[in-house]
Length: 219
Image (cartoon, helix red, strand yellow):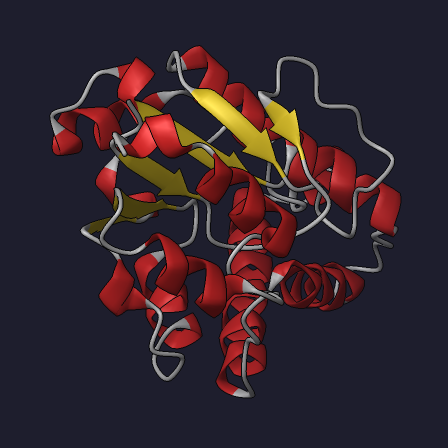
């Protein structure tokens, strides 16, 4: 019986990955470093690494890289201030599932960025708890975020389901022993997702799929 859904945030509930790509691209440009979309997808969406590793590869000092990190984070905050749109079908999906299962957000976002993203969209009332980057030791693809979610929920892995959009998120869920539905990120549609429980095109299809699983809800 399904008792909880652990949701990724960026690229699943809110359309923010392109903003983080833009902020990273602009910061690295200050050091004369190009960041193609393919490199961003490989480093960040697949491997869970900062795009600033490209600066390390160019021999920039730790102090210079830290300056770029501040530039990136500040620019990302500015872009979020202008508004991060909910993904199509997000609010409708959360409303349809609310009260049927417990729900949590398990995100790699820093809390300050997360708070900016959700300050006006009314989404957080659907969730029983939220874990941001400060709440666990290692980020995805490490299983730490989802192991913390399991511990917080008090549930067994077979009672929970993860919804993710990236390869690193899928790897984190699988390493924690969790089933994972993948809705591929629009920036990384060419990826494969071995081990995914299901691969669905969007949240509307995910909602339909979940609501059809009556036995999961004990009905």
